Amino acid sequence: MMLDPSIVAQLGQVFAPLSSSFTLVVSGSEQPAYGDLVTLVTELASASPKLAVKLDDEPRDGVLLRLEKDGARLPLSFRGVPGGHELSSLVLAILHADGRGKRPDEGVLDRVRALAGSPVVRTYVSLSCENCPDVVQALGLMALTHGAFTHEMVDGALFPEEVAKLGIQGVPAVFVGDKLVHSGKASFAELLATLEKALGSQPREASGPRELSYDVVVIGGGPAGASAAIYTARKGLKTAIVTENLGGQLKETLGIENMIGQKRTEGARLAADLEAHVAVYGIDVLEHRKVSRVITGPTKTLEIQGGERISAPILIVATGAKWRELGVAGEKEYLGRGVAFCPHCDGPFYAKKKIAVVGGGNSGVEAAIDLAAIASHVTLLEYADSLKADDVLQKKLRSLPNVDVIVSAKTLEVLGDGAKVNALRYEDRASAEAKTLTLDGVFVQIGLLPNSAIVRDVVATNRFGEIVVDEKGRTDAAGIYAAGDVTNVPYKQIVIAMGEGAKVALAAFEDRMKAA
Image (cartoon, rainbow, N blue to C red; front, side, top):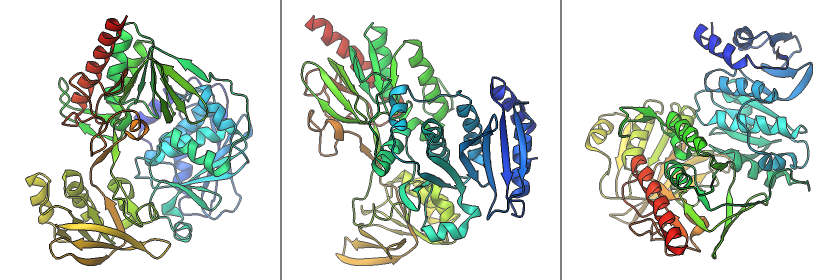
């Protein structure tokens, strides 16, 4: 068996509301993975009388699973065995095709329907990748919504020649035809913007609202943003959250053991708790949106990619932070082709290869330790004269036989042959000598960068890019507040972000009452 009986029982409850009949069509009977795929879909189909399995004897180069709804072929498929993390992608594909499951509002879906052309979109994945399902599920929903383009998940492990031909060194890797358009984790909003750029959009009358007004608009759906929105809504203010995804970076966090009142939780669970709490107060969550511009004045207006405009007299910025990039030549050019940020997702591509990890803090040292179990050799480079990670991590790192540590190393350039990374050039800061490491991949682990770019022209920021706030979270622009990791408040912790969100909401309400 591939699925535990308890999982099949749970799937029975998930599929119970299905109104349509679905056929899981399997082909590629001469391929090694065929038996596993047949077993998987047979066990899955046993969870509901609305699911059936059909074996297609069409010869194929590799196995293929495609879906039919009430006898009609759907525009998405799976080349490989969608087990592991990708099982959820298959389950959601069925639910979405039946009109169920969480989906963006009509304002966002109208942008999907307006995408031009009828391309073939493929996403190459690894079944151990935790970020891949988000991309597969988003593009699958887009294919179902649009109707004229198709999406296919491809398990790269089953198609090594194809992966080598395309030069894939990181997942998820999204192709339109044979052109790589995206590599790495991405939100629904980012993927939609990517396809709009790659395909263009046709004029279409939107069914969703284009002009929205509120008492308070919060940008960002992480702990700080959710907390701020809940507190303003509790004060009776009409509140909206504008975000790419509710939960923010919590969804990328595994174990959380310093959340006061809970011995341990997980990021995905806490994000779900935040979403449920926000829903209690009737807050409008405008998800899958990217703010392209902030217009200030007595009323603050957000211009959203896709054409919407959202206005309010009070704006709270809680946009958090993202992985910091090196900013050197070759880094962006070789992203997904030897440059990576997620050791867990992309580490398997570097089995028995030479790699470097840039960054000597806790995240960098932890990444080097994990990757040392996969790679033939790991070199950790740190700009400072010594590592900054906790002592226990440093001791573990230095005990590993296939790890070298180089301090006082300034990364200068990521080098490659045009298709993939083959070296990294750095400067020995003590001698000013430039040196080159021959390697196959570079993992960047140098901390977080505040997501403050959209407001840097309207509020003051410090040299780190953090929004400067006073003791109550006010910025130097009237009516604009900020909270969480995007600000200069020290100690980037979930519990602090939540407290700061509540504080700025109370300050905003206080200022509103004084001005009334």
